[in-house]
Structures are given as structure tokens and as C-alpha cells.
Length: 500
Image 1: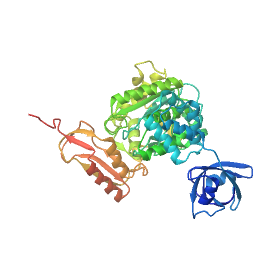
Image 2 (image 1 turned 30 degrees about the vertical axis):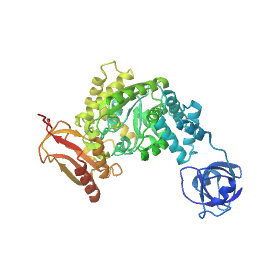
Image 3 (image 1 turned 90 degrees about the vertical axis):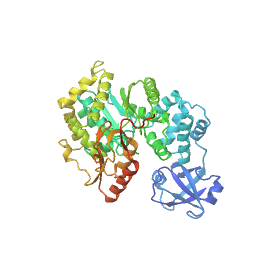
Image 4 (image 1 turned 120 degrees about the vertical axis):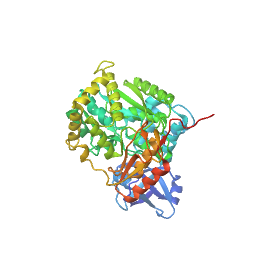
């Protein structure tokens, strides 16, 4: 069928065209079906939408992706034909039916995910099937390899180290201490980090307060070759791009398939050639992992996956029952990190970072077993980690002489005080994060909240619990109203009930 092109400067995210419903019937295609479009020497498969009025019979609406690939002009004559269904759609249905997929089938699906060949419905079906039916370890290995093979990879040589946190703990910016400690010890640690999705700040958001985080592969290599480490946003270097597309589907559905999570973490580590990886698995109220039994199961799977991929993995199950550090939000967390590098920061942030650094030093063979934490502490106390972080900040285009007091915090603030007397029983991560986001974090880097207390502290009526910071009166009110409604910090006596 010959159709006239009508151009629309709209980016749809994948090759999509719109046909008049009558033309679609003649071709035998329906909504989310596919057609093969040819123009001169070029061809492309595109997903179909249909309309009764937006596009006239004999015309085809072409969006930016198709226009660019085919070099189409307004009124160009295009050849449009029905095409066969993708093999990956059959493999997705197979997974939905509960069957195990082989390496070829998984690679085919992931390649189509990366190439944007799947419709939103098909991609959602794949994500949902993985969540409902689960994955065998063989499938997870294949999924990891496919994610690596369909993205960019970087070779930094041998004995590369890395770390990852499963997440869920507010203020958990240990990466920004582990990287300079490890790099100071002579290890290569090219840390690619994420931005926040549901939290008040991701590591990349916090690092961006101090330096640039978006670099291409050549830029990333230059930084690491100069300093032994980096803290950059992984989304800018196209590592395991299928993962980012899968996450976009998981987020609105509030699902996180275990197989996808395991493959996602390991694929991004393997993309930069990591040989030794420490995994932080926080457990507690408001985290992603709510029991030590579940954490232990995930840890064993990470270790097994690492063995299958030729990577040494060690997991640390940590206390995630309350936030780490005092600041929650990019700027406030960056202040915590700088204070910690000066050996003045929150003790819990320093302690956890030293634990992780020590295990990483031992795992890599840089330090003998049992001496890792001691060596990590010496590096931090001596100021070597601070000097290394200054090198990394400068290499990433930031001011290496930045001090905690130089970091701007939102001017509008409100302090939430205790209405009860007793000890702090718990601080809910999820609720604290919700309040900080209501204040504007992470989009507004200077927004967030600062904790004045921690679990076990003795509190009197009227004592400050936390201060909310925002650039907007409206957001400040919204966040403070939410704080009073949610009551994220529980204060009470040690004995709450007496039964006689």
C-alpha cells in the first residue's frame, strides 16, 4: 500500500505511526500491530495506532523516530505493508504461561526492549510475567548477560571493585565515602549511580550538588584514569539500557521482580568490568527488604549469580530500621558527606561506610582478612579520603575546596517538635522520605529535612525532632502538614503496656 506522509514533530519514544482505520483494515493490522515502512533504500518496522479522523485515508502520520530513520519529508510516498509478529512476543507469552526461557529467547526479548521494538503493552506483559512467574538462576544469568551485551561496556583492566545498595534507607550516602576510601587504597572503583525514583535523593543527585555527574564513556574513563574512581550517573553512559526501560514499567506498577533486580545490579557492574562487588542489603521498617530471612535469601542469590558470571560478591546485611545520617535531600546529604570526610559527620554514616569499605578492601585482596575496617578507618582519619574526594570532585568539574557551609540550603524552614516524652522508638524511612519529597527533594536540591534525633535518644515535650527545608511556602506547608499527619518518629516509654 502506498501512503502519503504527514509529519508531526513529536517524539514517541519508539517507532510509531498512525493510520486511518480504513487503511489499517485493508492492511489487516490493528492497534499495537506492526507494519513495515519503506522509503527509497530504507525500511523500518513501526507500531501502529489508528484513527477515524486524525489521519485521512491514503495518509500516514509519521513521528520523529520514523522520520529520522527513513529521512521522510512531508507528502513523501511511503510503502506500507503488514509484517509478521516479533519472535520476542511469542517468548513473552511463553513466560506468561509459566515456562522457562532459554538464553536465545531472553536475549531476543532484551534486544527488542533496547531497540524499542516492543509496544507498551508487550513490555508490560514481559515485566509482569517476570514478577508473577519468577526466574530460575539460569534465566537470571541469561538476563544479566543479555543486558550487558545490548549496552555499552567499559574496560578498566583487572581487579575492578564496586558496591551497590539494594536501597530503601533515607540518607544512605555511603557510596560517597566508600569510593574515596577505596580509591585512596589504590583500588579502581568506577561507580555509576542512580538518580532518585521514589526517594528524596539518589547518590547521583547528591553528588551533583558537588560536581557534574553526566559524562560519556570517554569522559568517565578520563576521570577514573586520573583519580582511580568516580561517582557518576549511570543513565548517561548507556550501560545496560534495557534495565532503564524495564524500571519505567515497574515504577507505576510498584513492582520489583527479584530476577530483574538481581540482573539489573549485576549487569551494570559487569558493564564496567567489576571483579569484586560488595552488596549492602538494608533490613527494617520502610526498606525494600523487611526480614533478615529474605535478606539472607537475596544475598545467597547475589553470590551465586556472581559465581556464574566470574565475579566475587560479598553481601552485608545491615540495619535499615531508620535513616542513615542527619540530612535527607541532595544538599543536606552532601553536607553530611563533607562533614564525614572531615571526621565530624554523623557517626552512623561513618561507621557503615567503614564497614563496607573494609569488606571491599579484604574481598579484593588489598588487605588481609580482619584488617579491612582498620585500614579503611586509618585512610579516613588521616585525611587521605578527603583529599581523594577533592580530586574526584575536581575531575568531575566541581570545586574541590567546597566546604559544608558553602552548600546552599532552602531558606524557608519549619521545625517539627515532639508532643511526647520518652525515647525515640523508631524513625520510619518511607514516611521521612515522603515528607522530604513533599518539600521538593530531589528536584529542588536545596530542599529536604534534617533529623535532630536518632533511635534511643531521650526526648522531652517540645524538643525538636526534625526541620523541613523548602524554597516554596506552599511546599513547606504541604510537607509540614504531612509530617503531623504521618508522625514518622515514634516517641514513647520503654514499657508501652502493662498487663496484669
